Length: 347
Image (cartoon, rainbow, N blue to C red):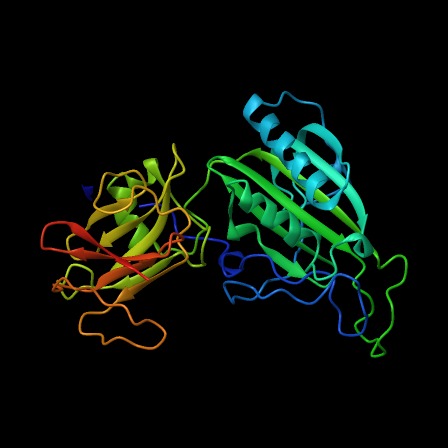
């Protein structure tokens, strides 16, 4: 689908540089029972978890308010995930509250629980990572705008279309100046967990996609139907000359606001048009790129390498977009002069 041709400048630059959940309850000076550090899939560093400066003691309250059935169902699912993965019962409150990571107002639920690191699996990277993985298995995607990590806690955001669940873990990380390896104290063995779920319409303003790129898509009306997806990388776009007009274009990861189907918006900066690939658009190739593991530009004239031995068989007018899918297939989106075609290959 090709759409003829602005949204406000992007914000939260520091938060968009964050990545998927990483190590929890690991200190070089303390021999904790939570296991070795897990390898972060994106390689980007976390930024410390800092509450909003506007947060006050009253913001920790949940005030009774009506919660929609869709949000209540998400809360049920979150409570079941915590119970199944951590063997913890949660204290549940529903209503208006300010969320734990940022102090932003929401209407939904807050689930709280406390557990012991000793009760976690031996090689676990921590309670937040365990819950994160379970959300993924249940069809949720990460929202990297809410990912952060510090010595005394970690938080991640999980999204399913317009429902957002924030998972926050907190604990005593020990004394940074302590250089002697020792067992954790009873206080250091205990962690707190908060899961907060509410309706949250994804905004494209705080994704670190420059207005010089997404402004074209917004003028074309793309932003009303598709949200920039922060589920895979930050910032969520790559650049190349996909249509061969000697003007750099951009491929932006998006998902359909109604169906949640994942895809790519190719922003043609020369013609100021937008092509939607997948995401239920009816374009060539998969209808939904959910489960996409990797993507990158394949530059015209590039020779195969050891790390990426694949190349398209179709002659190229411009650069191609290479995608690797979870079903062990790879594909190339290739501009043929008027639209994108899709060439599928098997790994």
